[in-house]
Image (cartoon, rainbow, N blue to C red):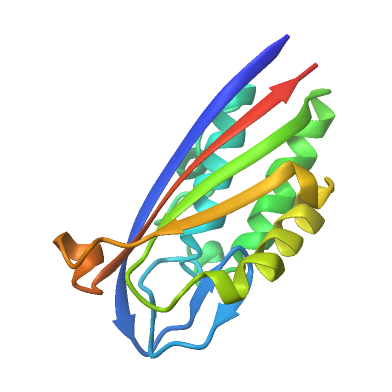
Length: 157
């Protein structure tokens, strides 16, 4: 059996927060506004994995009104989810993500981000790819006010 999952997330970028994508802190003057650490990349990955496995979504696993998740490391949340998915005998075939962000440039961080995701999900780096697009100066992303991520995954068992 194979299943495809789709995850999506968007967060406002604000001063006074760290910009974290895939567990990697970027050198930038704004970061994601969110209940957890705001890592939109891990949030989209988690939703894609939960959707493909039929186990739910990130909001049902980690409700934003629950204070135990305030400022929590999203990589830790991904570890919790991946253990549940592996317990159901699912195997990750691949993860493919698109980050839409105007600044900073993503390419200098790509290998580190892929390595971080692969480590948390306990898969080979060749099974993860992350690419970036800009907002072409249009909309919230293009104006530097937000970051968006889409993620697909392929699971098998």
